[in-house]
Length: 222
Image (cartoon, rainbow, N blue to C red; front, side):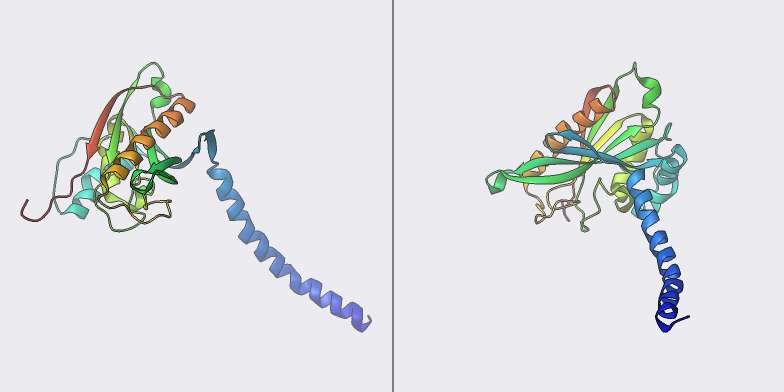
């Protein structure tokens, strides 16, 4: 074997482990993108299925996880069904900045028995989250938001469709956080309601009553 052939033979042999590593690294990424495809509905609305929480998981949140987080034991009602969680992105505007266009995010949670209830309209709970300090402690990232977990377990587990907007600057939005900025909070929640209706219509989920729930942060001495 010539020196040149020997050199190419060594390169080929050493390349095999690298090729195998590259294949192993690429495969999970491809699989992840196939697991959560994004659906575009037009007008800037997109959604993707991010998780399914079983009835057992919701009851664990109610019995153990949230009481441990809050330090307050409460006898919550039991979940009767699981839920499917969809992250939604949609277009809105910032009223305090001359209606500057923004792309922001939120969550739609649908009872996992909705498919069997096609002839029944489900109630909708629009949930406005309270004060949080982490950018991802919002509805669209439910694993990082104990408050959202409670709302999903208590209401989603009782057959409600639960929707929640991430306030501007939270979740996927790159803008500064609009903490206690009233018009922006209202705008985010209103446009999230419209976006969620597009998602629910596309998934053929019938709804009727709309309920509003807002967590109010109490100030010391109030």
